[in-house]
Length: 164
Image (cartoon, rainbow, N blue to C red):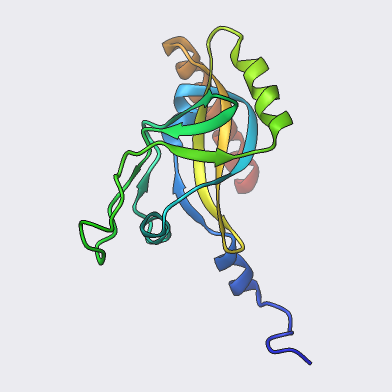
């Protein structure tokens, strides 16, 4: 019988699938039409920094260049316990790992005017770090107000039902 062959506890499963960074502003500024979970190519010090929660997705965006999906403007802080020589550039362009047909499908969507790819969150899936990217259409100010109003109405009705 192998070591550790038992079932994982709920806490262990939750720790293996935890959220590392979230781009909450993206859901406010964009209407998300479609999402895709991709892998990300990281250096060793980047992995340590991301697992420590030192990633910022706020200004990030994705581009398709030469048939590859790239993540731009995502800040991953340098690892504190590594020397300057072995550390990474915080804003370097990182390659996202997706199947060819998924990239081609996204390329077809991006040819429409006003659509963009934005990172929504970084999370662990088992021992792998994954990025959820969203195909978004930018919201105008009146759209943001309408979305906020709808959200408020839903919250009030949910609270009223809970009180009743």
